[in-house]
Image (cartoon, rainbow, N blue to C red; front, side, top):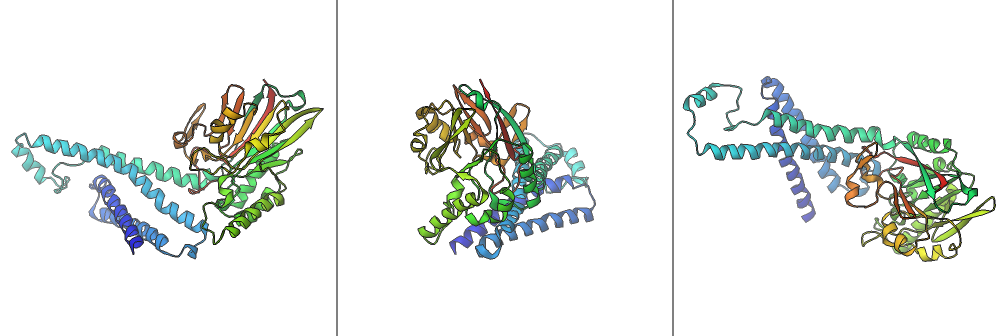
Length: 426
């Protein structure tokens, strides 16, 4: 009963937000005909009733009534409009604050009787508004609400699969001559459980293959929660191959930690199934271990560990010390580790011999702005390193923006990424 009351309360909050934003709609449309205003009101409140009803239905219905893709899109259909209304609300609130202060000032001045009489006779000023709303701010409110509504909707239709190849020259101080010019591709955060367009996903894989990399890295989060999510996409990602192989590691979502399992044994079996999926893909899953590569007599080391995140929020399954042991004498050591927070928390202070770390995890929050050398995302307030290449001394970190998406089924500004590195000496 408490749960039902809670969600009904949320519905009432939504309704209050709708009523407040409707003041902007009513003000902007007040000079239209009565019939037109009536139609606008019916459409507005009709969508409001549909959104609130849909929200309550999804919260109170059995979890298995709808499949995960349907639920994701229905949630997006509720959250995106209300997020947009929050932006509109800010400008309506600014107007109301101004109206409040104008009302306070009016208390200290005698009203112009003739002007008041003239205003009372006009039909274009709502009689309920002692101090009328600002047309400019109300129009600005509706525009402010429309921008995120259009942007996030377009982010689903286009941004979710608008794959971008990013080319990075990775200069490594001690790179042996035999590895100069080697091309490495990186994918991260596939999140196969979120995909809804196989054709587009296949197109992204084909973009990677056209680059003809010598080696491919995958830095974790193959699924959202359960191993079965990737089954339909194994035939697509099985084509990701390279002459020197594909090397992968696990991300925080791969362990099934965000699912309520009937028993620990079932959870462990899910992880075994996930590891088996890597084998079926033909990928070399690295679990706290290293590999040595030889080119023209020169050698470098590749280290791969299980998920390790800084702080209490993210799990620490990986053991870098075990994986690192035996690589000390190689001139270059590359690390696959899903969470970029690992770099400053452990890699840099304890393992200065690691030249470059490859990570993902942040997705750039799937929202932001990247224009030329400028980039911004809410992700930067959570992660110090959240997208692109970072360098401290002789150590480097690259954070891939992710191939897939989670939660919001789209991307705005921070687009899905395929990274192509060219190793150089420098």
